[in-house]
Image (cartoon, rainbow, N blue to C red; front, side, top):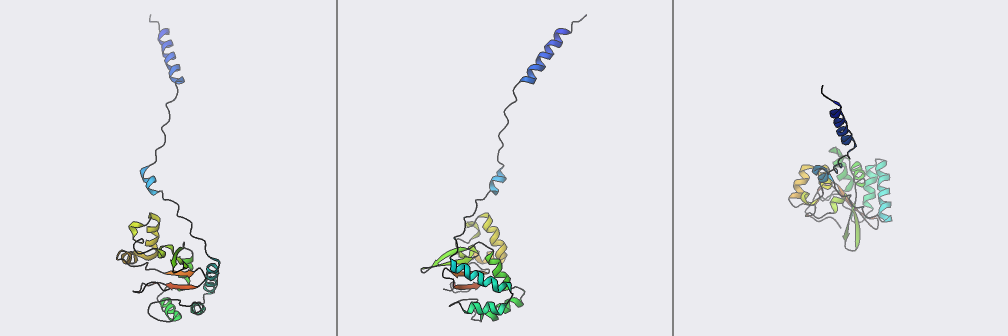
Length: 199
């Protein structure tokens, strides 16, 4: 008769050793390549606004909140050298024409002030410009020179036609506005003229 006890004892010993053996070290998680590519640095905080600039924004938004295009145009008339177009039309006539095409200038400037702003030195004066992309030079505005986030913003703001304008060496082609550090409203434009931005 076969003695099965030694075999059973040997099997139990192996099972005990296997159960008590330390677990193999867990593999460190590896970052997936696509996750690494999606990581983008946090954009820098925009320069703080000068107090007179912030006041001008508050004045403009008070007017847009009342949906008063004529008062909006009168406020623009009070700013020396203000430009709304390159055709020489009055601000009110120009913005009324835009409204008739289905685009409301009052809503557009509200949207601009919701965007980050950039700054530009013009002479000895600082201009705050919305959106920040409009403060870039034509060369720096090329999509391949922008971050992934800013390329997406540029596409959303100006569309394919605007991107083509930028690639052809043009300045920022969408709605844009500038207010100086003294609170002077410099321009609110949506077209690109042959002239430089107004000063």
